[in-house]
Length: 357
Image 1 (cartoon, rainbow, N blue to C red):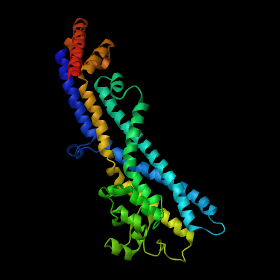
Image 2 (image 1 turned 60 degrees about the vertical axis):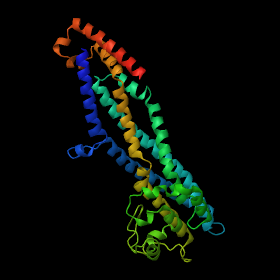
Image 3 (image 1 turned 90 degrees about the vertical axis):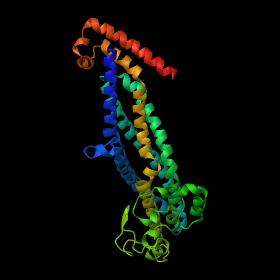
Image 4 (image 1 turned 180 degrees about the horizontal axis):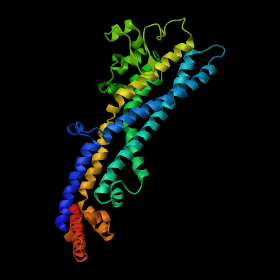
């Protein structure tokens, strides 16, 4: 039986490694012949879907509140500066809630992928419930909470500076300048990770300084970015030609409400651009996902002694999946008593060896 278990354990490790590489991380060599998405790919795809969903809610809520805030700052006349600050202050609170909600949903997605891996490892040990308990504990909620806390820390580390720089103060305001100054090097973190095509977003400080003019003013784009064409693909807005959708914020004839709306809306668009094309990579979400899944595999492989004991327990319970795998010469009752004792001794020896290391 000892020989059978050692052979079985080697097969279990091989099967697990193959599953991990093809279904969890999807290594390039396997990916050529594998049409199914890996856990990592699904996680990144879900990030994009959750981001789009949560941003839609944020836009809807902020536009609803805008009318109330504008009306509250319209006596005797519309106060553009006060309305801008009031709207941004309210929006920033919603942005923080948005980031927390997104982190929670990402944690739930990662938990689901982790449980798929745990379920597979359980199947390798004949469906034993002890596998899940040994790997993630007795409470899925505690496991989820740990993931939420870790993802929130990673997310806020890179998303918070972008949100503060873009949302809290109006363009060309002392408030925005002071925020950028107080953030120090943090405001530059995202620059190394931005993967979008729009040059106006490659350096966050530049966009923060000039705002939407850096997208739609051809003269400014030539001066600052060295390009003359206006932005073509901006999240949240369709821009075809200058003059159709671009509002000159310095034009005194532009209605004040439109000026504020255009400015804040484009800052929200810029925030989403960075979330979609930079924050995921900057926060190391993919590395963290791999780390969590790999950690489960490592723990499983380290517990050979525990799993030998599990095999013994499953034999006691006459688990049909285990019995079906045993060769004919190991299925007799008399021999099984010897098998059980050897498994027990093997489990004890492996545990002692593990604890002494």
